[in-house]
Every structure is written in C-alpha cells, then in structure tokens.
Length: 436
Image (cartoon, rainbow, N blue to C red; front, side, top):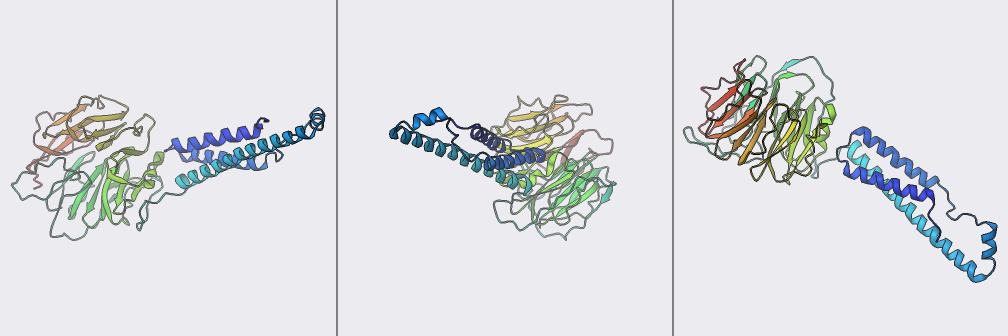
C-alpha cells in the first residue's frame, strides 16, 4: 500500500496539536485563543484546497508492469483504491478536529458561556478604564423584622439572643477589613465601622447579611439580594446598581464580585489580566476574598481562579477537598477538609509558611501576613509582623477572622471583637463593639 501524502500527514499532526492545546490550556488569553482559531481555520482551508488526486501518476515503467497482465492490474487498482480511502479518511478526521477546535474556541472565549441553568439575570461588567476617584454612597432598603446570618455557603450560625455564646465556627461574611478601616455586621443586620470613615458611609446600612472590603471600598449585601457600595471607586468597581438577586459578594483589587441565585457570577472593576473571565464560570459554591486574582470554590470542592497568575498562584487544578480559600498579595491559600493548608504563589516575608498548620477551618491574608482560625477557637499567624499584625497567640474563643493589609481582626464567640496591628487611623479600635 502506498504511503500517505505529506499534506495528509501535516493535516493530521496540526489538527491533533491544536485540539490538544484547546483542551489543556483552560485559561489561555484571548490572544492565544485568536491565534489557535486562525491556525484551525487555515488548516481547514488547506485541507479543502490540497491536492484532489490522492494517487500520483504512475511512471512509464510502472505502467508497463501493470499492463503485463490483468491480475496485476486488478491488484494495483485495488491497492490504489484502499490507499485513497485511507488518505481520505484521515483528511476527514483532520477536518472534523479543526471544526471542533474552532467551535470550542469561539464558544469559550469569544461568546460568554451561560450558566448551566436558565439565566434571567444579565451580566454587568465594566471595561478597565480608570476614572477620577469619587466617593460613593448607596441608598438601602428599609429594615426587615428578622435577621439570620447566612452570608456565604460556608456553615454559619443562626441568630442568638444577647448574652448567649455562639460557638459555630467559622462564621463568614460579617467581618471585613480595608486598608484603614474595620467593618462588621451586628445581629440585627446593622453595619458598624471604625477607623478612617470619612469616605465610608454606612450609617444607613441596615438589613445587611454580608460585607466585604478591599483597599478603600466596602461592599454590603442585603437580605433581598441588593448590593451596596461605599468608599473610593477608581475603576468602575461601584457599578453594582443593577445587580439583583445576589446571593454572595466578594471584593478584589479595585473590583467587586457577586453571584446570583441562578449561579451566575458578576464582575465589575479593573479588568487587568482578564479578571472578568470569572463571569464564564458555573457550578460555583463560594466566592472568596480576592486580590489581583479572583479565587472561588466550586460545588465539587475545587478551586478556580482568574486574573494575574505569572508566579504560579493560579495553578490550583490538582487541589481538591477545599473548604475555605483566599487570595492575598502574591499567593492563593486553600484550607482542606483535613485541616491542612495548601499555598501557591510567591512568598515575600514568610506569609506562605503554613505547611505545619493543622486543624484550620478558615484563613485570611493581608499584604504580607497570613492568619488561620483553628477549630478550637485559637488563631495562628505567619509573615511580616512589623506592626504587630501577627500578635494573635493569646486570642481564644474566636469564631471569625479577617485581615486588612497591616492589621488583623477576630470575632469572639460572645460577639465582641479583638484587633491587632497598624492602628494609624483607628482601625483597631474595636473595644465596645458587641455584635450579639
């Protein structure tokens, strides 16, 4: 049987290569996707316009041999037909592979994939334009008569009468720390804040079930699914007015994230390194506090990310059984169901030295320090301690934690707060706050 032509071999090799690339490179950039798309389309055109005659002309000597007898001529023709059929089959396979690659790239990169459920809430994203800083306040709905603390998918506690200890840990979403402020939500859904509050207006925030902070802005989520913004908006991170039916919120560097009751992720803010790629995800259980990359936990207890990842912080594909996670500076921290912590990324000041931690149920990170909440209510910390942000060894009965860039906050089971670290704006002045 004659050998395959060079065009067929090239078609097969290139088609297999681009299919493999389109499958294994899950978070490729738009530029890479565009290049793969062009290659796939070019291959498809090449196959169609390549030589039609798959059987070359026999030279005179071969023709003489064929003409010597009828049996030889019949065998020759059969061999040529088999070769032609095989070569045609390979070219058809290459065509199908190219078409599948084109469909895969267009559907995943150039057309935003909808959630697996029917979507009623549209996605609102912003372009990475930076406008002059402005202070935003938000009108909030009137208070509701009851309140339940259920801010995220992580196990939470029900309302407890004043004076009764709440020992369900970790409680998520009722503490938040910005660069120069600390915020919390009390049992009645009223937000409180200490520190530099000249740009943080929450006096009329009521019926709040979750808060999140990053840098100089604070998000609040009401029980009826509305999102509130206050603070400084530099990159459109305040474009949340049209968000409805929101179940969870999170913040990142100059960005705001929400997830709807239908499981759709919304993003607005600075879109460097394709932060908004998170809006294509579905099957998400928990939004985690993020930085210059976004971290979420899926329904299958895995972690997916978007945004900057040049230092390996986004290489989370092999991590499973995750119960809590966060992004902090150059790293991604994942708390496993075993109580151990896995970290990926770049270590600047020892903040990634968590390999010996055990019995961890929640984690938070600052600029260069990391804190972990243990199941016995104590707290551990590693990293830069210039301002005392890691001085948590005496803390007990803690049920929730959060971290600003240079300070650390804990919620005790009796509803009071403790804080340590940089206090240049009063962000650690939490004495007298009682959330229960």
